[in-house]
Length: 117
Image (cartoon, rainbow, N blue to C red; front, side, top):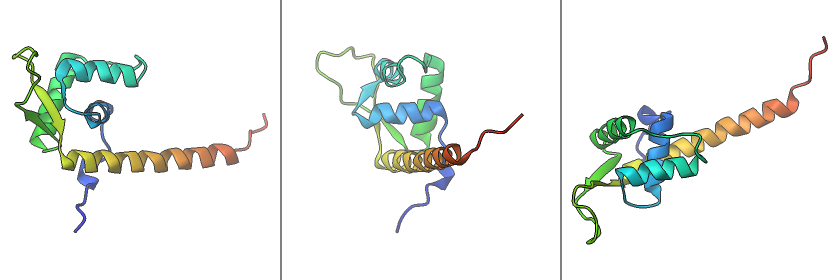
């Protein structure tokens, strides 16, 4: 039975960017902030407060999990995060939703005729 993901949508920009970052693999908080800046070409930046507040919400909703495994040479104070299978499903649903929005917008913009003054 397919799970209803509509309660999770639409995602906030911060949540969308965090999940997109974690789609590439496990990351620590600072790595997520760097990835968000990279994927948005510096136009969207997450501060530590926004990042960690959102991560806690995502963990409580079971979209993300904190993991204990970390690289051997890594700073032991860093916390690593992983997107859950539910998180992957929610991200996929949001991408499909945004795809529909963009398709509709393109259609409307193509058929819009300039108004005469």
